[in-house]
Image (spheres, rainbow, N blue to C red):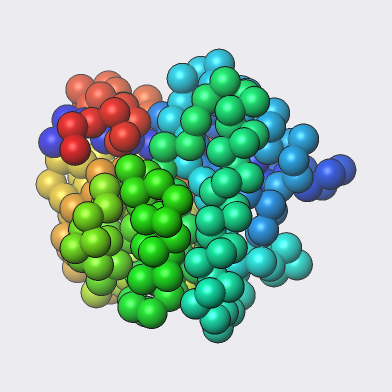
Length: 256
């Protein structure tokens, strides 16, 4: 494979509280998962991020989450189906309005944090998110953890499904992510991460925390914008991939 997308979670600053360097990351990634205000982000900051993305031709996704500003969307919530569906529709709709004002549009949806991890294997909440996309705009892509049950459920529902790998996260032998509270969950060495993702693009495998290779078929690679050294890591990753002949391109531009 000589084509991959690079994405990052952006628009997460809130008032005077700054999260990450959106402008620098937008020079490096091809897709931006923009916060919708439920886990992070305020309207003015989100709009600024969308405008900066539009200037650079970066593809926009709605980074929907549980309503959890205090926990940054990383706490599981047992939301009723009606509430979860409506909240996803609400978040996407808000971002669509801001994106239109910025001269761009929302092309896909990527769940955030606890919602992302939970619906990777919980069918009830997964179907709620799928139903929300169908109710609003079934042409929106859905970003999912590569190899997850959600990938199959979304495809069966007729959604454009984008499977994702994580540059700066550790993997377990079953292809799931190492939980953030465990050692090896977050990786920090730009050179090691770049080499690891080059192997993913070329061979479709990453080294799990037990030392064995695990197969990951990914359409996109995420570099978290809030990680320490995120910009340096994303820059080195992009440099290494491009030097090895890999084209960086938004996944929504690729043939369905």
